[in-house]
Image (cartoon, rainbow, N blue to C red; front, side, top):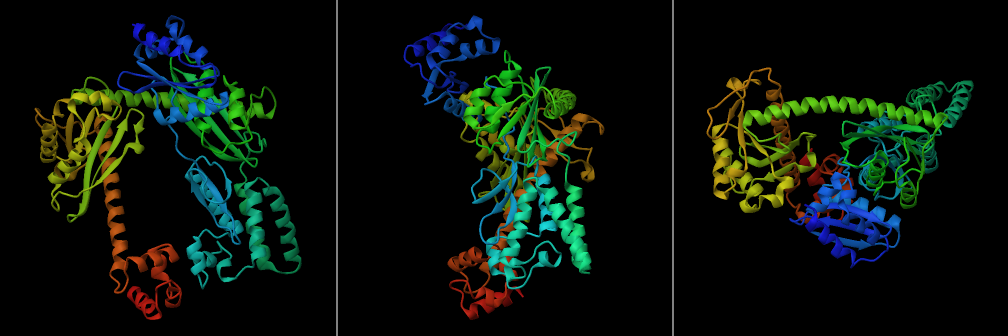
Amino acid sequence: MFQEGVAVIRAEVARIGGGPGVYRMIGEAGDVLYVGKAKSLNKRVVSYTRPLMLPIRLQRMIAATRSMEFITTQTESDALLLEANLIKTLKPKYNVLLKDDKSYPYILMTDGEFPQILKFRGRPAKDGTYFGPFASGLAVNETLAVLQRVFRLRNCTDAYFSARKTPCLQYHIKRCTAPCVGKVSADEYMRQVSDARDFLKGKSREIQERLQKEMITASVDENFEWAAYLRDQIKMLTQIQGRQGPDGVSVGDADVVALVVREGQVCVQVFFYRGGQSFGNRAFFFEAVDGSGDAEILSGFMAQYYEGRPVPPVVYCSLKPKESALLQEGFGFDVKVPQRGARAGLVAWAVQNAEEALIRHLLQRGSIAKTMRGVADLFGLDDIPQRIEIYDNSHSGGTNMVGAFVVASPEGFEKKAYRKFNIKQAAASDDYGMMREVMLRRFAKIDPDHIEEVRETWPDLLLIDGGAGQLGAVLEVLDELGLSDHLTVVGIAKGEKRNAGREKFFMRGREMFQLPVNDPVLHYLQRLRDEAHRFAIGSHRARRDKVAVGSRLDEIPGIGGKRKKALLLHFGSVEAIMGARAQDLEKVEGISKALAEQIYWFFH
C-alpha cells in the first residue's frame, strides 16, 4: 500500500539539499496532505521512506502522497514560522489544525494631540498603543466603559472631533471632557491619557493612591463636588480591579497555556495577563492526531496560535513544548514550565479549567453526535452530515432582494462559510425565481464528474426554508446541472398558522412528513432554519439601509458624487452631516454658503 508514495519520496530525497526548510506532501487531486518543517530537509524526508517505523497517521499520509514541494529557509526558526502560516492557510488533513483563528480584540489608544480610545480587532495597522489581547469583545467593551467613566477620554472619530462646535452628549453625561471645544486644555487631557495608559499597564493602585490624596485635599478646601467626583472614580477603580489569579498572583505581561487530552480530543486554555491584570481566557478544542504526543500537540498549537499575533514576553505552559527553543527564537518570548510557587499555581488553575471545559465539550459533543445521527437517519443519509447548507431569501415588497445560506457542521455553525447573494435577475417578489438564481450562483460552475475536487466545501445536506414550491425550484436547477444525484435536498416549512413545532418537511419521492413537537432533531433543524433566517434578514436590512442612506444625500439638489464624497470624508457619516450646522457644512470644499443652508434645511 505504501509503494507508490515511498517511490515518490525517494525520488525527491535525491534532489533536495540538507538545509532548513518546509516541505509539503501533495495528494492525487493536488490537495496538500501535510506541511512539515525540518532543520535538514533531506534527513527529515528520508525518514518517510521507512513507513513501518512511523505512526498509523503518517503511514496513511505516505500512501496517499503523489508529489512533494519544498521551500528552503535561512534558519530553522524561519521554517517554523512559515510552517505555521502554511498550516493556517492550507489546512492540511494530516496536521494538527487550530480551527479557531479568530482575531482578538484590543484597546487602541491613538497618537496625536488629543488621543482617541477605541476597540480594535485584527492585525495592528493604525499608529498608537495597543493593549490586549482581550478574551472577548464583551471584556473590551466593559473596560472601555470604565475608562470613559473614570478617565473621560474621547471615543469619537477624528472627522467628528474636528467638526464639533459645541460639546456632544458624552460631555453632558460625564463620559468625556470635550477637548474638541476647549473644555479641557491639551496638557490636562494628556494627563487623563497618561492615567488611562497607566491603568491599562496595571498601575491602578498608584492611580488610586494619588486620587485619594487629591480627594482629601479637595475636601479640606471644601470643594465637595470635585471630592465627590474623585470618590466615585476611586470606587469604580476598586470595583474593576480583577484579581490577577486564583490567589491574586501578579505575573506582569504573560500568557498561561494549559493542555489536556481525553478520548482523542484536545482542550487548550489560554489565559491572558497584561500589566498584572487578567484580560480573560479562551478555550480551543480540536482532535488529537494519531501518534502525536502532548508535547508535539502543544508545540504545533503555539506555532499556529502566535503566528501573526502580538506576543507577551513570557508564556507559562503546563508542559514543555516539543520545540520550545524554536518557539522562543521564532516568536521572541520565553517559554517556562513553573514547578513550584505562585506561578505553578496559576498553571494548575489553568489545567483545572481546561479539564472542566473538555469534559463539558465531550458531553455536548456526544449530545450533538446523537442529534446528527438522528438527522442522518431522518433524511436517509449514509453517515452523519459534515456540512449542512441552509438557504433562505429576504426582501421588502420585492426590493433589495437577498439570498443567503449558512453552514453547520458537527462542530457548530461555520460562520466563515456563510454567503449572501444580491439578487439580480429574478422578478420582484418571485421567491421561486430568487431560489433558482441562488442555486445557479452556488452550483453552476461545479462539474458533476469532478465532485471530489470540491469535497471540502461540498454539502451533505441542503436545507431549504420553504415548502414544496421552493423545493421544486431548487431541484429543477440541480437537475439541469446534473447534480441532483449528488445532493440530498429537504424543504422545511412552518406549519399551520406558522406555529413553531409543526414544521412540515418535503423531499423528492416522499410524502410530506412532520416530527413530534418535542423531538430533539426537530429542535436542531429549527435552530438551523432560524440561523439562516437571521442571516438573510440581516443581509437584506444592511443592503436596504445602505441604499436608504445613500439616497438621502442623492435627493438633495446640487449634490452629486463629488460633493457627496467630500461631505462624507469631512464628517465621517451621513448621521454627522444631518446633525451639522450650516456654517459647519460651509467649511467643506465645494459647498457654498447657499448650498450649505440648502443641505441644512433639507434635514431640518
